[in-house]
Length: 172
Image (cartoon, rainbow, N blue to C red; front, side):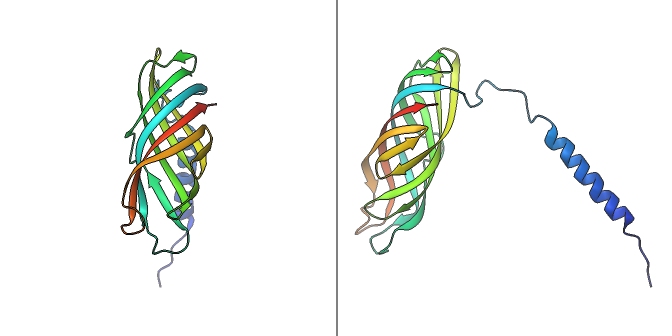
């Protein structure tokens, strides 16, 4: 019969836990110029395409859970206003990720977005949250959206993506 002590294992677990706590307490990196901003007052027209997963189809008779994603900062944001006291100087990039309950007529959900926009102080990055009910947005984005084009029609061909123009106020 082999007899072993559990003391070394306990000591290793204790040391690993202590080392992990120290690492988590350290700052992850120095502050960067493109860190999320604290204040914004922007009026924007934002054009982007979102991909729908799973595709929407009228064959599914009840609303379903879907994910919407722009797949990165693929949208274009034309904004006027101020970010962290700096004037916007040109068009920016936009991306979002959203979880909805949707059918072929209406979508309701919530998501997150990232807006990178040039200002007199350099590129500013704004990350925020929003809620959507149909074409109305609220939260860090407030305003309306309009669907301009689609891949699929939801009734004869599953709907896999939509192109949207949001007319919104971005503010905190």
